[in-house]
Image 1 (cartoon, rainbow, N blue to C red):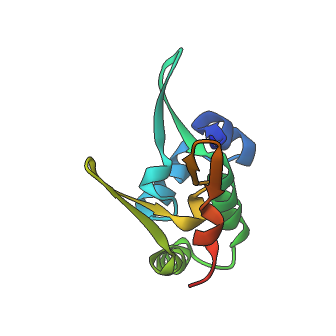
Image 2: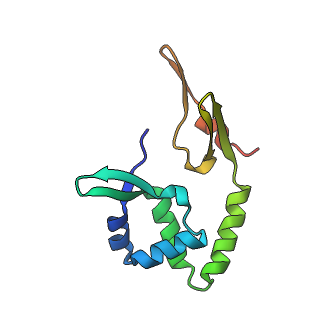
Length: 124
């Protein structure tokens, strides 16, 4: 299952935000570094984002006018530290993924498959 992406240019146009604002939010920790995905394009390398995640975050930032960006960054940081993560260890190294960002995980053997993502999203 592949996640839908949105280009940086399309994101800026969709929400009417500036390049400077986007990168200020990144520096403040409002937008995680790992959401900035570099991909090859016909015009060279472009930046893309996981569409659902970035759109939800930009809407949250734009909708919280009564709270300073610093306060919002602290609030989000606290929530993200409490969020469950999947730690995948292989012979190639270790990768951590936030459970809320996982779209699907399937265990497949022959013609049988089991969806493991639902098990992970249960509160523990």
